Image 1 (cartoon, rainbow, N blue to C red):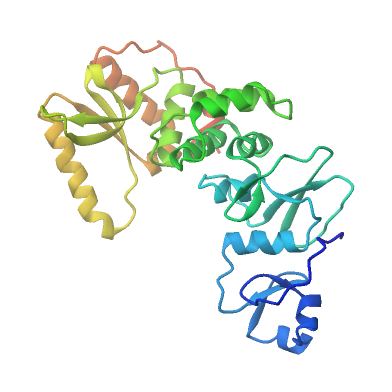
Image 2 (image 1 turned 30 degrees about the vertical axis):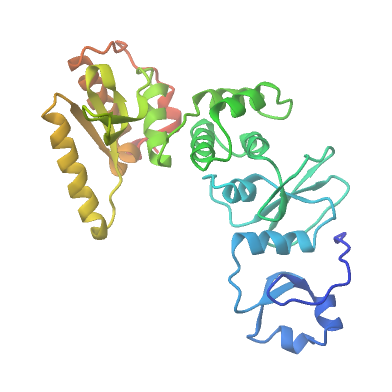
Length: 314
């Protein structure tokens, strides 16, 4: 594997270093194999008292990669604060002429290298380019989740993603353009993104994301996940999993009761329902919409089933 030509430097074991650098510093193979160090990837090591964070793993991968390698795809998305599909590998883009093979490093070989930006001291693709690159590795809903999370992290905006997708000449152009059009601001969690996408893929009207409900003095009292403010209908994802969140859950219940006294109604959706019975979720939401005078199609668009099959249909 063609390696990055490292300048002669004083070895700092708290940063990734190669075996050659260790030997020059008087650290032999027996010492490298001891509990004082751990091997991040083949040929690159780190002091055992330094946590192998994603930044450190990315730096280690770059240390033994071609000199023009760039951190991209799933790894770049996570470093931007986004939520991509799971991947334990460090993803790098490298020139096509190189064929790196190191366990734990996933190379993406291209003819035309992306223009990197610097993020956390690493050469990385921009948030927009990262979103576009992951069009090959995500379905529509996962890509919207990624876009929403990148916006939430302050790495980009919905309009910048739309603009980038409009001029993208890479693979999966139709998918990234469609996903970018669904990305919204102020989305608090991936499950809120998924719930919203279930509704819109079924052809239901799209709710407003995370509106603030203010009192008479203009002070914000509540935020509602998804809503139709004019009809005072809220749709909320309840993701409590642990007893230590009991206080937050009780606060949410009191908040809903307060809003219900002012004419609001709520449909509350649990994770088990979203994944296990999406048809039931749609039926409940559609019924609530009709009750509140919101126009609902007579027949739901079946495309939601591709992304939300439900447990009985898997």
